[in-house]
Amino acid sequence: MSLSILTAAEAANLVRPDQVLVVGGNGGTGVPEAILEALETRFHDTRSPSNLTLIHVTGIGAVTEKGLCRLAHEGMVSRVFGSNFGLQLPLMKLIVENRVAGYNLPQGVMSQMFRAQAGKMPGVVTHVGLGTYMDPRQDGGRMNARAEEPFVELTELAGREWLFYRMPLPDICILRGTSADEDGYIAMEHEATTREDMSIAQAVHNNGGTVIVQVKRLVKRGSLHPQLVKIPGFLVDHVVVEPEQMQTYTTGYDPARCGETRVPISSIAPDPLTERRVIARRAAMELRSDEVVNLGVGVSAMIPNVTAEEGIEDMITLTVEAGVIGGVPGYAREFGTAYNPRAIIDQPYQFDFYDGGGLDCAFLSFAEVDPEGNVNVTRFGDRYDGAGGFIDITQNAKRLVFSGTLTGGGLRCAPAEGEMKITTEGRMRKFVGKVGQISFNGAQARAKGQEVTFVTERAVFRLEADGMVLVEVAPGVRLREDVLDQMAFAPRISETLKLMEAALFRTGAMDLKTCLTGENNGH
Image (cartoon, rainbow, N blue to C red):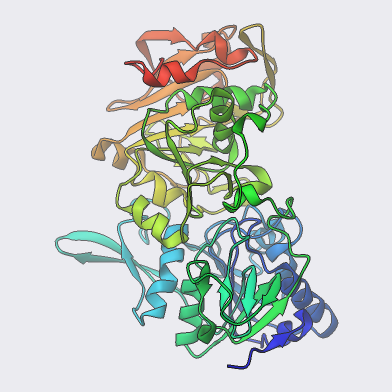
């Protein structure tokens, strides 16, 4: 087999107008950046390719630059499918302004979709999304007026309701690995995630399309360990070699993120004690020994740093949807990766586990919460962030912990001397009368018996049969002025209302190891 080796510019020239283009990557990991940069340059120079349908499973970019921010040009893309747009604000802006048709599907569904397409199945049938804005009785995953064609249908099988998702068949994909041998076999030995690249390559190949893979290096035929090979050579049409490709947008290469080495957890410095750190610490108090949990973006992604300081990372199994299992997951531009992972699996298999109810607990963020326990993280103000894996995870985990500040927009507060000090109240209420979009359905959760907790920097709430219940307030916080008056609805106040632990508001470990082995988990 003769391997076709191209420059990034030559690879970019293979993308034709009107094609369905799939770009691999997860956040800042696994992104074929050199080819995306060349594709943007080509469009600036020639106004081609145009009218593309762009598909990406999760947000790819560094918020305002890199990744799919490079393709956010009117005329270049006419339609986009993705699970999250928070890391590619220029593309989000085109959707908000109705200049491209925007479709938002759950991250797990999208990652599983390529397996379905590879096997010539019509789409994915799942319970994920029922009762949320994915449901066609609400928005059907359509993000704006230009998204006219429906891609989510309500159906009934075996006596119950399901959602049937589909996507356009792909014409071409741009993926990434670490090494390519002389026959095009792709290994991912330096990758911090392996994503769904194999499934994408199969789907594109079986649809008669073109598979392009960016790698760091070329190696001798047959020299790659077969267990490290993620894409066989017969699926790969072209390879682009980029020796300077980075592991993430902030890390050139860290062997502890791909399992090549392990680092002492004690070397991870604790985050500064801020209100976000307080929230992460209080959320961590909901951990239970020997459980398998998921960690979402935002404040929840700061929990692993807490587990590192407390020395409890081996007492639970932390996972992130990208496919990383165990270790200490990172956050911000390192989200999706982990120090000392115990396993790195393909993302569709991670979501198979999540969708089947395998998670004991999940930690996620919130933007709006209403009296029914509905949560909105997807559409608020001028942001259409999309769900990412939020819906897959929240509909199926046994317990849920949502984290965020009580108010937003200018909030200034800080922990000090065992108390929470609020100096400037936020302008925006987050606990509202009715959420702007249902990303999580509180009534559905109560019917299924899920345990739901809301953690803020100054109060903790539980979702009970009769709605939201206030169960804890922070030391130094006034119940009426600082909590109840900052909410658009009145929660029931627990008969056993208590103060949040004073240790949350002081520097130093809180001895969560003892809490996890105690009968009541320390709270």
